[in-house]
Length: 425
Ligand code: GLU
Image 1 (cartoon, rainbow, N blue to C red):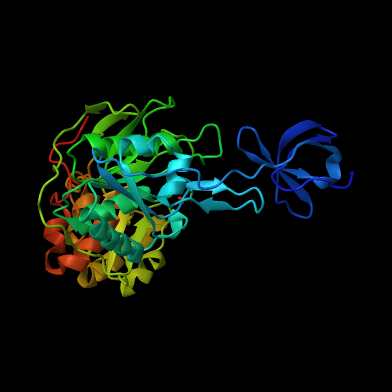
Image 2 (cartoon, rainbow, N blue to C red):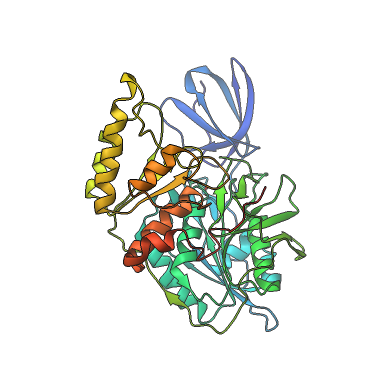
């Protein structure tokens, strides 16, 4: 291979024994050269296979801070609280790092359309992957929302997509008497890729805040593969159903609240939401040191898997079907299952053990089969709920933090739109 006469960020053309590849030279490892293709994807090319490299053009550093954010009197104010993820990140070709862009100037530079929709304020809360988010972060965010709500008409939270639904559920419970919209926005594709959904999702969320009287927590993501509209999904019902598609977010056991077009057209799908008001926002935080377990039912279970939860404060079972768990000893192969039932009985004497289902949609009903009835007799709560496990998990933690004496009663009562009386077909 010829000596590298190029630097990070340069556009180069690489000839290997397998063909020619063109892209941006990214910081690379000893053995592999990283190239960002025009599609936005990064590929690693074994340095051994490279025959030659041609420099096409030198990296041009983008001009900084050319974007002016002057306030317009007739526009609402939106505060963007940044927690991390792909949504407001930009690739730095010098270091290869994805950096957060979070000042109002930087956000307007990246998404200029925002300045015509609202006056933008912003604050960097964290710059983290959402898989690392803990209960403590929900409380930090809630306190920031309370502060920002004093001089904003709505809040946008930029968030990694992996656990955006959990945070939406947590904030739905924590923010009691919410009087303005709190919309979580993520992006499945970063803003340096042609297929990015970052701008559209952010624009739709801003349009929704600017033009509606919605005052709940919701998630705003792409509706379909076109770049024309987003869905506003209910905070306690949103699930990431696809790991990478831009329209990978769905409302489970519920319908979206609205479709929002980038031009600001709003088509309401379900209008039974709380409206903007003068209510006094109250924070009902989640205790940060609570230990809530979550166990998924699966074939060949051992009671040891359950025993670890003896030192926990609560346990969510993600059962099968209508709310089942392997507790029936019907032959010599299933002897372990009587132990499982006994362990569940021992657990329910100490902590709340709640049921949810690993079926994607539908309600649990532990009256239909003997397994469900036995589990209820053993003290497992949660019958008839149609909460998705993510929401059930957060609700259990929130109830233990705020309504410890009423966990059993409130777990299956609808508090924030998380449970419906009738199931959708
Ligand atoms: N795992 C990352 C997160 O959820 C992915 C990046 C993204 O989805 O924004 O934060």
